[in-house]
Length: 178
Ligand code: AIR
Image 1 (tube, rainbow, N blue to C red):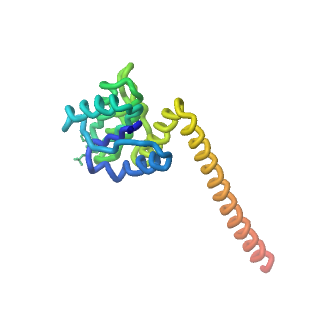
Image 2: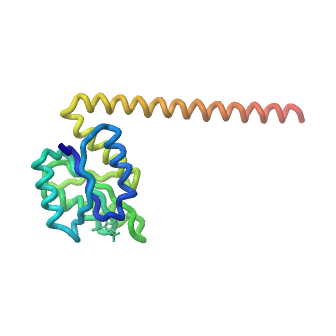
Image 3: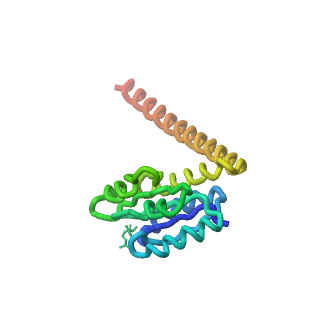
């Protein structure tokens, strides 16, 4: 049963949204990953929302570029949380999609993430955090993932500090030989 739906406005958005699917996979979350457009296929969008919601979908992630109304259109049809990922797909560099996604009227929120791949990843993390409210096992997995982030930053810091110490030692040796 898919707990998360990932909708993209076009197949041309797929590359930017693959990282979302990767994070969901890494967390063992079942999802649907598909294309539907608020403008080109409004009926398909509406039907998908009802079908998936009836099948147990808890969170909708909607990514689109340009006049990005997909997340808003989905939010109009469900009271499940809707997360929006604005994509940079036009000469306006994503500002068009950001404003279209974030500026929802009161009562129809879209939790709007960052643009492009960063937002794609965080939409998956946010969806996981929402599901984890009612799923202690997933909550534990999220905590473990956080521990992984901590250790990778610590490893990176140790590497940078070591390289810096070596450069300083080299400079000192060079200067003392002058
Ligand atoms: N889009 C598709 N239907 C409505 C919108 N806003 C968006 C897609 C894509 C952009 O329009 O999400 O980012 C261009 O789509 P295409 O198919 O022309 O490449």
